[in-house]
Figure (spheres, protein in one colour):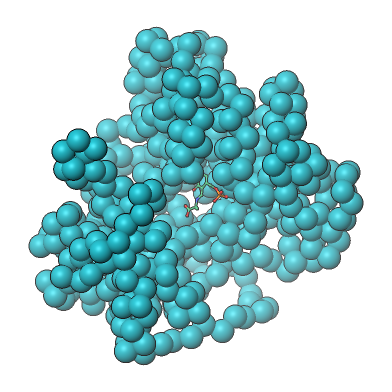
Length: 456
Ligand code: F0G
């Protein structure tokens, strides 16, 4: 079946409210047209993020009840350690309360001023943690990743030739090579096993450690099985184990593919590095057998990791995202192709060509999605990324102007996706009515979170 029905029954439900257009209009004005300032209760379908928004299973909720809250040596830690070893093959497991803490621990340990950390594409918090430690975060996506309309099966890949060249020139400056699976900032696109193998070969040749940012590793491995030759008879679990075997370690925001609301970890084979990280962990997160989490949370992560690899679930999960993407595509809405693992990305420049980048076309779509239908997405374009030249004050705009519709896991039914598609198609058909925006307040850093705008 192309679009399988949900492989679960619903045991507990959470009421979501519809609001009137008048209320939404008022809330938008009060929020200065900043979608982060709209109370979540006034949102009907919230596609702001797929992170920490999953519905846990009955099995995970049952696991919470056997949380062992001992300060040291909780049984749930040992269960998590065993599960992470089983899934990744790495020996040392360090829990953290979310992904960015793992990044903070890792990069504050391996980076020094003037260093360079390559990645296929850094996620924002990864980039920020590399930069905060004086190093440069270098993105090496393949050229195909920059063309939103191009259908290519592994658009998340890294440009391995560019990596090799970088190491030839600057080996001494590179403390570690990293790769994000799936590549969130490049449209949630997967990385192929062949690409991971090639990155690994280059890293071995130059003797550089290789780590995976594996927040969405299960979705990535499912795509390998679907799209890469030689993998269609393997289980997703086997594929994951092979993928991890090419790297020296990983960090994970468990809030994605481990189907929990909070949690993360680092795992690796280098015992010396693990011991340095654990010392820091005690300083900022807690004792190494809980790392900023309650024992019950560790249990939920352990159970979620296994559930996240379930193939019926992954089939439904990726198909649901595809259902939304294809519904929009069929109606003519320009979406990033192929449809990624956790989100549908709309190309806002093509959606509303009459709005210049200086007037935030992505944000215009975000505002209209909320105004028309109570749907929340996130702008990943000029509002988030445009940079002003410090000397001339001239603005530099990003290549892509995207709107991300991230789908929480096991939360919305496919009928909700149908509702989202119909609502966006309606906006698309009347798109010449959309107007641009002007900034009336912006903070010096990460302005999209707190800015205020005026509709032109
Ligand atoms: N790495 C990737 C690839 C991510 O997508 C995220 C978070 C992180 C690391 C950081 O993890 O949030 O647990 O601290 N992504 C979320 C998103 C926030 O909306 O894409 P965290």
